Image (cartoon, rainbow, N blue to C red; front, side, top):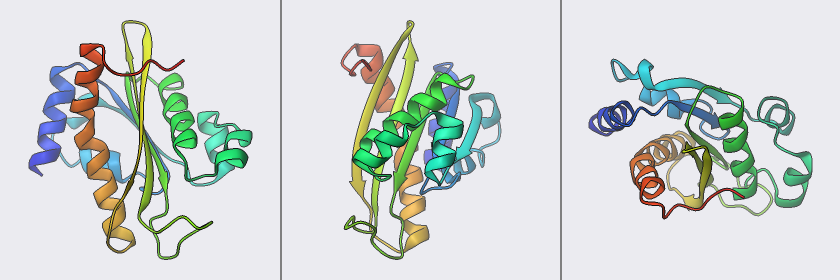
Length: 169
């Protein structure tokens, strides 16, 4: 709970409003953050989008991206984060897609999660993507991925403020 309180405090202090676009965590990122009283001030929305059709419909993820790179890819998570940033009242978004288990898919091991964090700052969009692997059963992977997504927000946001985060071109 301490981590969640720290993230909520950071979001509030920095006047950040969060939207999530979640596939393998299925809304757990925003749900975990919502455990903190007062977190509603820094949450815009949480979207759980599993299918390629839902990713396309709600986040404008291109079917070509999914066909070329796969559902579990940084490219797909990047488009998910951009879609959440552009379609909601948020200035920070977190997206993920991955294989929580119980079985690998398309030779991608269980526990593989692709993340994207998008920030709108000074009329520019910054994007950080990363792929991580978590151990455990399905729900342990989902919870670890949700907490990781949240704990990276302050570090990535600091890199945006310092000017070292990559611009999304």
